[in-house]
Length: 325
Image (cartoon, rainbow, N blue to C red):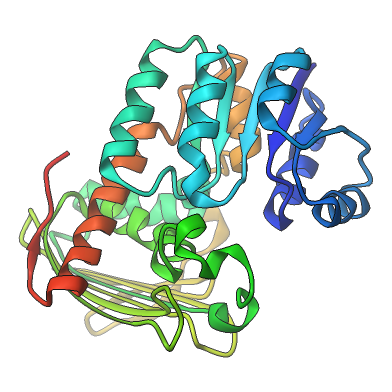
């Protein structure tokens, strides 16, 4: 049984803890969380009763752990990830991996020297629908990819108000670096290297970006647009992948294939690849040597390089070339 410690007991970590327990091969034995209110919510939500530490270093030094899950505020990830890896522990971190390219390179260097494995919780890499999309595009069955449109609607301005997510010292950025990082991950994972971006953002009176719109050009020549709308009034996820001989439509979970003269028909469950599980199941499988790490640290480096380029474009009001990392 793998012994798991959690750093940061916010809402998403309740889900991680429950999924870890559901594997039957891992159990959460301790959490490091300075907020007594967060600890109480964690216990109520998970029905678990782990040992609680206020300082993560004390937890790492006192608990005989195998794995650590990092779910702390974004700018704390660097310290939490690297210290755990240096202790020889396996680490699964919430997104974003870190908040700068320099920090990402540091994480990768530490991970290379660690006995532990390192993985990021970008769950769309394990979602059969997105795996099918990637397979269709990479196979060439629809011809060359020419355009991607992606839209994220979320009530982030309202639900995150008053939390650390609106504090740039802790969040490292706004909605783009929070939920939007999942979209940047998919754009890079499916579309390949991004060559150039031109972006605009609106903070909506806060200290972090709330709405961001981005135009992109991939190294392949394909184009893309990303709209992250953090002042919407509900959640919606929308993707269009247009290729020479067909267009894939993803509308908030509904997946369809549009062909010229044939209309759009649903992609049936039987057509999708088998599920490879959730990030926690995949992490446990990787720790136990059953599979390669499906979402390694290099992906976090690629995503933050793209994110930084967008921030630069917004700040300097110009197109920005994305570095090849």
